[in-house]
Image (cartoon, rainbow, N blue to C red; front, side, top):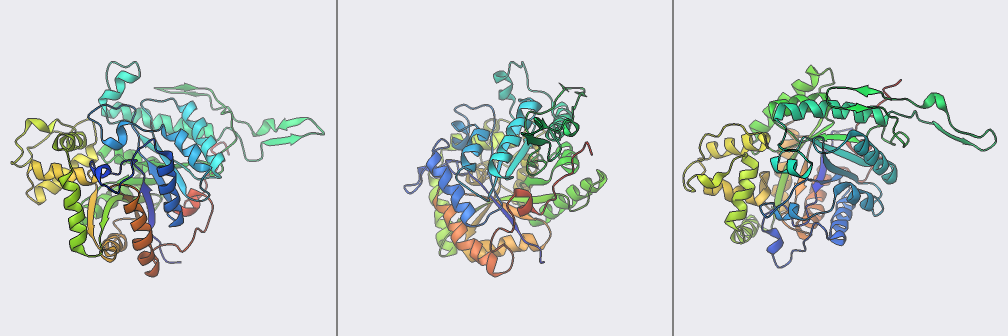
Length: 433
């Protein structure tokens, strides 16, 4: 069987463009369940692998419109599980501002409710502002957050393994409800956590919901190489994307895993027109609606520094690494240097796609670009980001996906029922043997 592209879609209620919600044909609202459900069902109609819900545990007037007011993502996944049947449902949960037992229980429940379609995007939390919402005086440093995340994921997997398959007997004649030999007590005592277990729900249909990771710092890549099954990344240039993927695969091997154990998906924001000129007109129309203050806040978030302190029409200065989104910062700084971009130009570029790659052209041109990145080995697939909703999501499914299918690059129909099936990932064995 020839290698197939994996496709997901980020569903951000206002669209990924900071001003996309202002277009006359845009519907919006990260609390607009009817809209979110419609877009997810469009993605499922296109046979996409998954939909992805980003999250953070803070907000304010400086937040991206799509993140300012929104549903709690695990609650949302549970609702969407009732309105879909095949598409994977992935959400972000921070290991810095949650507890392993609660998160293990919630994701196991969603995996059962959805018939094995849950995925967990593991983040350590990039925003220092979140600390004030969790009785913390300060945001933990980068290294500590990742050390905590490693222990956290180990615990969650151990809790998912609390019960062997077939543990629930329910024998009315003998009165045996569960087989006691198929229950395992975790008994974890570590640096950050002490968790007894067992989990009060049977093992998820997928064994473990699929583990996603999006960190791209050196520490984040080490963590991904050892733990992740899917990495959602940002890269702007093909040669740098190839280098990123090779580095990640080297780290996967160094962690004792197969070189192809991780699926690498890059974020892409396609703006599709009947002609290339029409697509570029759409980009210009969106740009004209951008509030420069909000756009600079988005860029500052991605770079981890307040960029208002620097002159707009000069190149961006040398910036030290921050404890925030290091992957985005590295990619955007590289792009700016390569193209001699001013701070103003980088601000406007980032506003269009939240720091991910912007593709403007016909459906054929978008398909050509995705094919080039896929066939080069840089990517196993892509996470599609719509400037606004629902039009661009519908255009991608109705115009680009058929081209990819005609080229033999994407599935005609779902070939399995679980997210692991879609991604070609095996169900992990129970760690208790």
